[in-house]
Length: 151
Image (cartoon, helix red, strand yellow):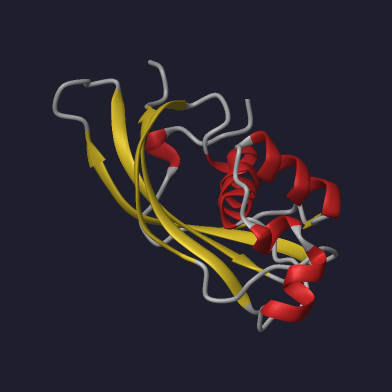
């Protein structure tokens, strides 16, 4: 277990996650087709080259969101998460492209005791992903139910 107990977290605490990930064409195509998303923006290079402002395929934003949160798990919730309670304010200010490398940071925005579960608390995180140019490419707030340190 490498995640933090609810009691170990502090509002304003920021985690600069060690894992960085270069996104491949296979990542994008596999995720997009596995989720039955037929969007040309992720799959059709010729269409994107001639019909979009990007000139090439862009990475599926749902993959970006999943990867951003997944990278945060080892240092925040691994072994201590009970449930994901919701997402809020998910944004993608810049697109990602095949070959981009992302890094992620997570900030603890809020903590509150669970009213119905005395051994757990609710944590609000903000996850932020940046590309290799240090441009913000994804941001979201996430609330989760997290275990307190056992007595």
